[in-house]
Length: 389
Image (cartoon, rainbow, N blue to C red; front, side):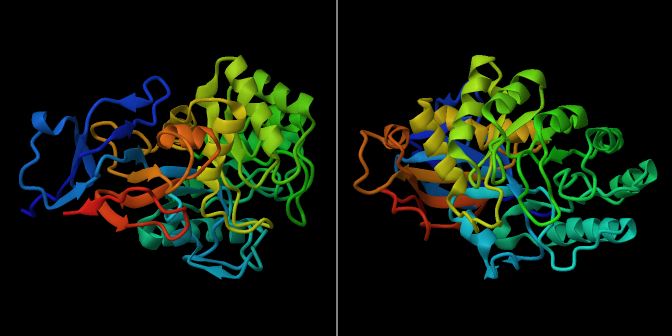
């Protein structure tokens, strides 16, 4: 029998839970066994002996690894859209440990015939299942639906392991009626859907307005703040108020519209619907710090506690996407980031500094209980760095 691998993180100053109902947890220690959280609390009360890896947090903050709900991968850790390699590794250095594809739409020569699009989706799902760049979990294989698809196509995709649809509206399906039928077929077979919202983003896409979004009834209102062009304010508030689906706010969109969507969600007391993405790689490039920037922007300009904003990029997304990460809870995946106030940043502590609009420094990332990176090469340097001892 293979010995169990034990990780112990001690001397934690603050634990962000990822849960809106209790965003801060008591404790200074987390123990994980075989990549799953085993215990949370104070070291004096936990079994901390015989750890294979011990991390001294040195009083800084532990958060669930961040989840980017909207990316457009292609193959491996390379994006032809921006001719950039190691972009996923770069995002890991921005605290992102899980990414969710909204369609592999930037693949040169992307097949649009039904046989070809299904083949590419299945292949994409497989290659990211088998290859995790720098340990990052990439949930991919998200076909862009096209006219002519029938129920058996969605059944076949599901049976092959595809669990996501690419953005509805990026292909030839443009009407709410057709999209609604395909979304229903996808949902029947356990495939989650996202719909493009706003003006065209790439050649071949088009305007998807509130009426189409409401009729299609996809699981996620993709980039409600535009990707890149946002809908009029009345349509954004209508979408928030008229359906109960995920409200996805992205970095590569309209920031003012994102704030409007967030405020509307709070006004209707449905903040649990807010999730965050970058919508990258895209015309605005790769955004390694995009999720951290969204947290700081929404907290500072939207005047909400940063520990709540962190939930949008962790627990909210995990629950909506049915992931076993994103929440500091026994039994969940041991995906963490250790972060601290950036050197010389204003604010009495990290949370106050973020609330003033500043980024924290990432000192370490951990995925499935394994240390994946140390001091970030992309964030401002953290005031204090954790250490493997």
